[in-house]
Amino acid sequence: MKKEFIETRSRVVKQVRRFFDERGYLEVQTPRLVGLPGQEPYLEPMWSEVKEADGKVHRGALITSPEYAMKRLLASDFDKIYDLGPCFRNGEPWDGTHDVEFMMLEWYRKGISIHELMDETEEMTRSVLKDLPKFRRLTVEEAMREYAGVELGGLLGDREAIANACRKHHQTVNETDTWDDLFFKIFLSEVEPKLGEVPTFLWRYPVSMAALAQKDSDDSRYALRVELYVGSLELANGFVELAEPVEQRARFKEEQELRRSLGKDVWPIDERFMSALPSMGQAAGIAFGVDRLAMLVAGAESISDLMPIPVQERF
Image (cartoon, rainbow, N blue to C red; front, side, top):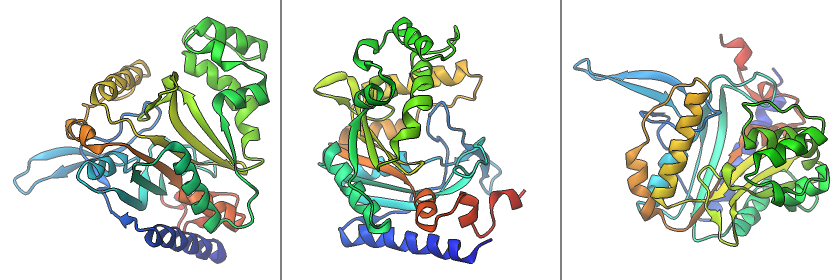
């Protein structure tokens, strides 16, 4: 344990709060234990149970993100909110940049574009991590062209075309690989490792990776999703938020089917969240890894260095 790392993390958390408080955001503490967590195929909640005094038992999970609850607040007439608190993900690698429990910052604001979201994210990051060079903004299509020599536009939705691209880049292709699987074989090996050399917003993802993001009105093959890379770390993932329940339900069902195909547990769609979506309106938001930001400030090699009691010493 290094006391100065823990002190640095504390200062980073205070600075983040100061940034949003000074800009008129309301801090909200959303529930950490919920009945229906997120549907993401590659994230695993930590499940527990809640017992009432009469013995009735409810299945519950610690949240992987406060996203659902915060969007319900947006639908209830809140317009500038942030949540800064712990989140939990099971099955994560204990590799220095992940932890089963970590500090997540999420903020949402009505009426802003993806470019305004990037502006505010850069301002917040600079308020904590000083002397950064100018942030770049690259679309996924531009990044694949620049770093891998791949013209993504002609490959979208065409599994055989992207499979051939993988073979040309000496990547294996398996019968069970989806289009997204094949995309990431190139992206993770040739693109992502180079993104953080200069702080970079990577945005406009293929629509199959939209999650809870709106489609781009200029080209519906892409979604208004953005990630931020600084140094060797991915710090943030954000969207112009999808507020259309029919499209969102279809995406959730696709995620459920993918979870089933991976042999994972599946739970019902959160109908209270679905009912709130039409009232949310135009909004954008982003999830930001505060512990990773503190790692960069402190010069630490692992999230565990910043924890008073690291995960390896708790079990």
